[in-house]
Each structure stands twice: as structure tokens, then as C-alpha cells.
Length: 232
Image (cartoon, rainbow, N blue to C red; front, top):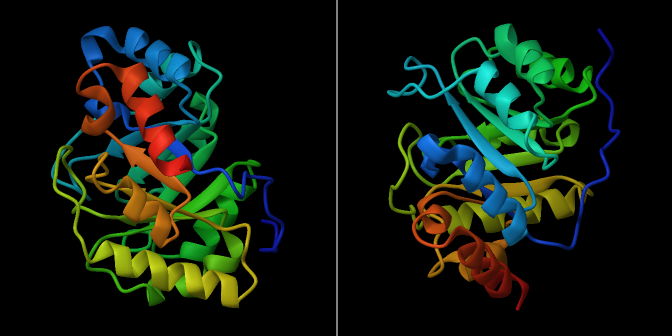
């Protein structure tokens, strides 16, 4: 296995990115919803992978990711809310994942897992649940491409944004800047809507994962509206 290093993938540093969460899409008409995301200007697609063990829900696995990969060139971000993520990383890589994130609470040997993702030349991220202290991310921050802060307790879509997340975003951003980790992006997932998107990005978030806020109503118009809000 390769040694951990500080090499970072080239990722947009100034543009705030929108990642529609397919957990809120219409699975009976998934291709149409994805096409609307593309036409609306989404930057990537977010896929919540749940195993019914690490979180109390089950979603989908590599076959669905592979099917989605065939119909879009948008980057696919697979958020692994699963136990023993190392066992499944290669399967999601082969299915077409571009970003892969694992929970600090579930990866026993976190640095090894990060390097395992990077060995496949994929963007590696770590995830923290709302009650997990930011210190859990600090020792691994220099080795990852993004840090995902959950702003709801994971497992279900459509939950309300936990407001204390704003302070966590600000604190994490200061830590990254003070340590020269300017290429490490902050991603927020859970309860992101039109009424809090500006606050979230102003706090320091770079990537907004948005489910019901985008898929309830006109998908293209919702993405474009979100884009105007966070670009102003």
C-alpha cells in the first residue's frame, strides 16, 4: 500500500458547488430526474449508500451506481453510511464513483481507508455525524480532499437542519486555513434549503448536498435558484 501523502486533486476552490442528493429523487423516473439535474447545472450527484446497520435504513449498492454512471458524466459522490466500508470501496470504484466518503465513526483504521480510496485515484472524504466532535477530523484532514459535516442525523431524507452546524463549519474552516489546507473542501449534507443556503456558504461550506430542496418541484429551476443564492 502506498504511503499517505499531501497530494491533492484539483478541485474548484472558489465556486460553491451543488450536489443534488438522489435519495430524494423519483426512483420510478430516475433517469429523467438526473437529466434535469444536468440541465439545471448541478456540479455532481450525491448518492447516500445505507446498509441498514450503520444507519437505520437501506438504499442502494454498486449496481445502481453503475446504472447511473452509464447515463451521466457528472461526478458521482458516494457517501458510504455502511459498516466495514473498506470491504465495499473497490466495488463502488468499479461502479463509477468519483468521490468516496467514509464516516470517522465507522472506519476503524481511518488513515488506511483514506489511502485505500486514493490508491484508486478517487477523491477521498471523511464524514462526521452531528454529535461527533470536530477533533475527530483534524488528524486526518491533511490527507483528504473534502470533509463532510452531517447537518442531520443520517439515515433518512427530509430532516431539519441542525443550526449548531453553522458554528462547526466556521470552526473547521478556520482550522483548515490556519493549517494551510486550502484545497480541502467542506461539504454539508442535511436540511439544506433556500432559506439557509446563504448562511451555510457564508460559514465556509464549499459543497451543498440538497435533497428535497431540489427534487420537490421543478428540479432545473430549483438548482438555478440555489445557484443564484450562493453565488450572490
